[in-house]
Length: 204
Ligand SMILES: Nc1nc2c(ncn2[C@@H]2O[C@H](COP(=O)(O)OP(=O)(O)OP(=O)(O)O)[C@@H](O)[C@H]2O)c(=O)[nH]1
Ligand SMILES: [Zn+2]
Image (cartoon, protein in one colour):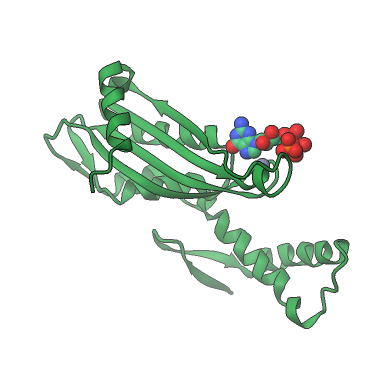
């Protein structure tokens, strides 16, 4: 028996009760370890809620980004840059299990095929909804689009705030980390500059 969870892409069988109960058991222990009473009314269901939240936040492990792209690739003779910018990113840093979040800006230059626009943010989520470092997230998105769609080039820029740097540790509230990854045509300075100009412009 298991519950179904809406992931945004498809309903997947994710709330495996056995796994949830296993994770919840660990959370119950953690609540005791931090000095809480796990049987206190307000938090008696917290281990299960937290287990479900963790499963949601890591549901990207169950999804195949290449398959998502392949499900909506269309033959089209459009060869200008396609940019999807300001894509919300929510991920978990693999060092502290704390959130990092911000925006991704993604472009590709088609070479025979375009892809359904919504599939680009879906690819972002597949890799973001895992334990990550921002650099690997950036490269995984780039590699998936390049290797699946085979465009003339891919550009990925991600800007994120890391909670592990703001609510603990060095406690810098305003620092933002920017990462980028490019392939093919984006190694050309002019093309890359056009992409960077367009993601900075307030056109909409
Ligand atoms: N490169 C990179 N580092 C990250 C990312 N997320 C978190 N980190 C860093 O991972 C590092 C882990 O360093 P450690 O010294 O092992 O951990 P720590 O003692 O908790 O370090 P502080 O955060 O400096 O207190 C820290 O410098 C974090 O800022 C990320 O996405 N990319
Ligand atoms: Zn961290």
